[in-house]
Length: 255
Image (cartoon, rainbow, N blue to C red; front, side, top):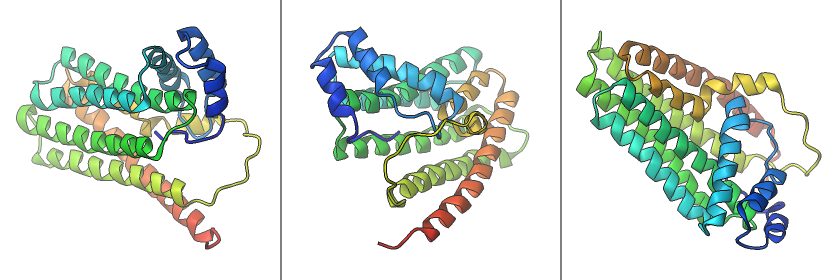
């Protein structure tokens, strides 16, 4: 997720007056929430609200955004390590999902905390993106390790799936980030109403939905099917959005 480096963050910090109470910080964060356009239903109704609560708690505890980013990394990598090192089971699936979901919520909280404190920094945004990329690579690598160590695979070809998913996920992350940086800045204006259909369509490539598939670790066959379905959805999105982003940047005026 991208941290805010401007906008209304200063006004939010002024209203909360430093280490404000939890309720005041939560209200300020709710008022300064980014528009829901371009995000899935999971991010809109689950991850962002949960991140808001965690950001208010972090503000009350006097944490800074970079510390929250590191907490997100610690939670996520605990889940990653469990996938790679522990034999799959239903209990492991719940634990991995909880660790990954908490890490994702904290990933939202660091940006919200930055806005609450008056805006983020280039160094903080860099750290956030580096951690996000590391989580993508590590998580699919852990699935590959788990397949190799514990999976009674019907075919060795299944070992190629995490590698392919990793490639697609990294390309989606990098291409989306680079497009946002290269896209010409538009004049600020009123935000349009979010599209419910778009929010539903984005669910298969939402990280929070991806975390849910690990609840199936107790049934390896079902896990492989769910993982493969999400890979197929991500591959389709990469093609569709890649063409769209390339055309958009091709039509943009040269600086």
